[in-house]
Length: 409
Image 1: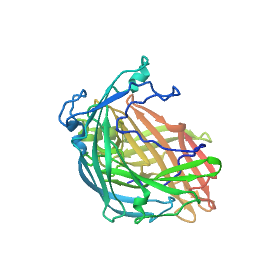
Image 2 (image 1 turned 120 degrees about the vertical axis):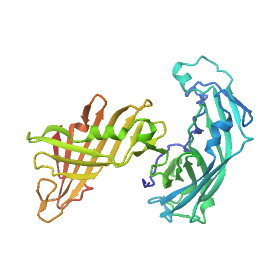
Image 3 (image 1 turned 135 degrees about the vertical axis):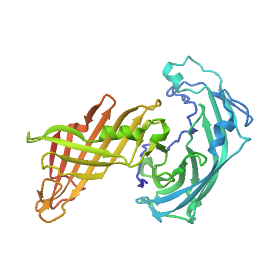
Image 4 (image 1 turned 180 degrees about the vertical axis):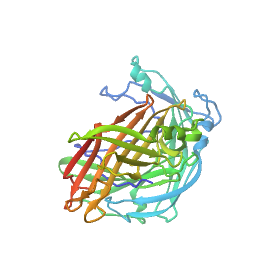
């Protein structure tokens, strides 16, 4: 599971600064402001609707929102490094629940507009919106997080996918956390939960810390960063676990194996020495992670690579990234891999994996390569080649390379 680090995100040169999240589910209408900027969308007029009444979306609120309700549990990771919070780390279990209020459903219908919409505006404007409220609860087994609040789910389309947002004032966490400000005016203002509905196929979410500081000359700075996350699938928050051999009605693993077994790409080093790169990718299981609405699925994979010359000896490493893109018809139309291999000197004399390099002068190398396959059986190499970053014995692999070699492919 991915671990997150807190970072600052915005500086506002004005008396106030704020960050807005879109409504849960699909966005509401993007209304223009008095200055004339924005979207010229018609206003929606809302009225109450029964839980089982069919809406213009051809689904009732019960059908639109009912599957969001439920309870789920998942491993929970606190990783609040550089946030000013204490404690900063820990692992426990979280329980998330959502109970929908069946008396809260609202139906919004467009009531007209002052001028005719351009096509690009019409594409962004909702003419129907359905919303309902519920009570969400997030509790960790260690007691650090225990929050409950009212949330609103809104959609302008049938079969919606929701991402729930719940904001809680930081003062409610005074018994769980201490916050060390970075300046006299810096303060923690709220924690914001973002999570998938607990009644959905996955149980995942994250917690953001929001801070605010008033600087000199009326300048204010707001910062937000992820301090915790949870997932029961191994996928990041906002991603769904997908079994590619089951989801599309056709065996994808066999196709991936045929694409990435014994690939050969010929090229030359920067000294014009010709060489051939051999590369293969192996996907151990068909379960990957897909961001909602995306056709790209990230899969675990290993990469085996070497060159016909002795420049790069055979190595098998975990892929830094491996993905497939599959359209709605079940056609695999693209696949990409990214190699980012850090090799340290394994003795005082040689680096066997890198052409027996002299470790009296090198501390190690980093080898990087990106390759994309497309359904016309073409291979595209990122930046035109494989790159070897050499580090002198007195440097570190995370510093600046001492020398760069390229195998143009």
